[in-house]
Image (cartoon, rainbow, N blue to C red; front, side, top):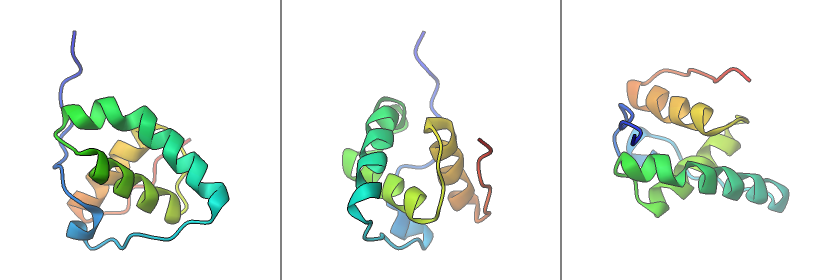
Length: 88
Protein backbone atom coordinates (compact mmCIF):
# COMPACT_ATOMS: atom_id res chain seq x y z
CA UNK A 1 0.00 0.00 0.00
CA UNK A 2 1.55 3.37 -0.98
CA UNK A 3 2.23 5.91 1.72
CA UNK A 4 -0.30 8.76 1.62
CA UNK A 5 1.15 12.19 0.96
CA UNK A 6 2.08 14.32 3.95
CA UNK A 7 0.32 17.63 4.56
CA UNK A 8 3.27 19.65 3.28
CA UNK A 9 3.72 21.78 0.18
CA UNK A 10 6.62 21.22 -2.21
CA UNK A 11 8.66 24.41 -2.30
CA UNK A 12 12.10 25.70 -1.39
CA UNK A 13 13.00 26.65 2.20
CA UNK A 14 13.61 30.21 1.03
CA UNK A 15 9.88 30.42 0.26
CA UNK A 16 9.32 30.03 4.00
CA UNK A 17 11.96 32.60 4.92
CA UNK A 18 14.73 30.10 5.68
CA UNK A 19 18.18 30.76 4.21
CA UNK A 20 20.29 27.99 2.73
CA UNK A 21 23.39 27.41 4.85
CA UNK A 22 26.91 26.52 3.89
CA UNK A 23 27.68 23.42 5.94
CA UNK A 24 31.07 22.16 7.08
CA UNK A 25 32.15 19.01 5.24
CA UNK A 26 31.38 16.74 8.21
CA UNK A 27 27.71 17.80 8.20
CA UNK A 28 27.36 17.40 4.45
CA UNK A 29 27.55 13.61 4.66
CA UNK A 30 24.78 13.43 7.28
CA UNK A 31 22.58 15.75 5.29
CA UNK A 32 23.08 13.68 2.12
CA UNK A 33 22.25 10.45 3.91
CA UNK A 34 19.04 11.88 5.35
CA UNK A 35 18.08 13.46 2.02
CA UNK A 36 18.49 10.09 0.32
CA UNK A 37 16.39 8.38 3.00
CA UNK A 38 13.66 11.01 2.62
CA UNK A 39 13.61 11.12 -1.18
CA UNK A 40 10.92 8.51 -1.81
CA UNK A 41 8.54 9.97 0.74
CA UNK A 42 9.04 13.62 -0.22
CA UNK A 43 8.87 12.85 -3.95
CA UNK A 44 5.44 11.34 -3.25
CA UNK A 45 4.50 14.75 -1.78
CA UNK A 46 5.63 16.45 -4.99
CA UNK A 47 9.08 17.65 -3.90
CA UNK A 48 11.93 17.76 -6.41
CA UNK A 49 15.41 16.49 -5.57
CA UNK A 50 16.62 20.10 -5.40
CA UNK A 51 13.92 20.97 -2.85
CA UNK A 52 14.64 17.84 -0.80
CA UNK A 53 18.36 18.65 -0.69
CA UNK A 54 17.65 22.28 0.24
CA UNK A 55 15.27 21.39 3.08
CA UNK A 56 17.70 18.83 4.46
CA UNK A 57 20.57 21.36 4.49
CA UNK A 58 18.43 23.88 6.37
CA UNK A 59 17.29 21.16 8.81
CA UNK A 60 20.91 20.33 9.69
CA UNK A 61 22.03 23.97 9.79
CA UNK A 62 19.40 24.77 12.40
CA UNK A 63 20.80 22.08 14.67
CA UNK A 64 18.25 19.39 14.04
CA UNK A 65 19.18 15.75 13.95
CA UNK A 66 16.96 12.83 13.33
CA UNK A 67 15.19 10.80 10.77
CA UNK A 68 12.77 11.29 7.91
CA UNK A 69 9.88 11.83 10.35
CA UNK A 70 11.80 14.67 11.98
CA UNK A 71 12.57 16.26 8.62
CA UNK A 72 8.93 16.09 7.52
CA UNK A 73 7.85 17.58 10.87
CA UNK A 74 10.42 20.36 10.40
CA UNK A 75 9.06 21.19 6.93
CA UNK A 76 5.48 21.16 8.22
CA UNK A 77 6.41 23.42 11.14
CA UNK A 78 8.18 25.87 8.83
CA UNK A 79 5.11 26.00 6.60
CA UNK A 80 2.93 26.65 9.65
CA UNK A 81 5.35 29.30 10.91
CA UNK A 82 6.15 27.42 14.12
CA UNK A 83 9.32 25.88 15.52
CA UNK A 84 8.41 22.29 16.29
CA UNK A 85 11.67 20.54 17.02
CA UNK A 86 11.32 16.81 16.52
CA UNK A 87 11.94 14.60 19.52
CA UNK A 88 14.58 11.92 19.21
